[in-house]
Image (cartoon, rainbow over all chains, first blue to last red; front, side):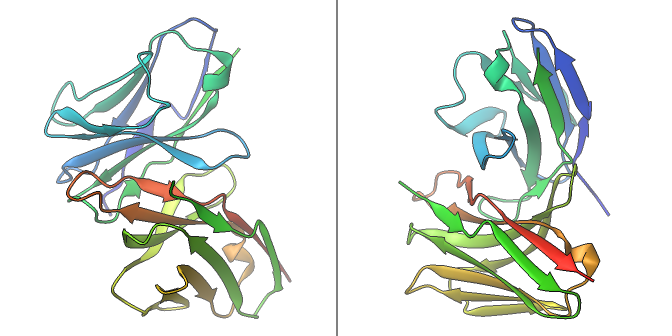
Length: 113
Length: 114
């Protein structure tokens, strides 16, 4: 069964460093998303991406964040200068069409020390 | 703004039915979802319902939607210990053609006792 895959599963980084979280969405999907879940809190929407551009983003997705689809398969989230409060589980998701079910990856646990 | 609320905990005995409830505020919801998260794992889509439906059944899972009261429930028949997990209710909203992101509840932790 097709699935969304994310790497790495766990990333530890020092405050101020740049991190890139990687995702391979399901191959025929056109819409891509990043969500995050701070420990014990709700899963929060960060950004959605379609047709090689950001279609929607939340207040959390500030200038420190960027997304890219560098080739036909990968979808990345970059955090330029990590802060302690960026520590969270980051989920990538993809969907075939707008407003249909989104399939999530297993998540990358980011720990900023 | 939009909000999705769930009770935080539910405990049932193995073999009983579990009912997890969710309320949402935005009447523009298009799809409503149930996701399952096992410890240390990602979000697994369990089932979803389109907002013009009242009920959807999928094996042991029954989703009921009361659009008037903005209430969604997930019933798990014959609950097993393997069903122990956190269950998230989520809605996607049609902003008149813009990309609908998912609004999640805080999740209900289901504990199944043998």
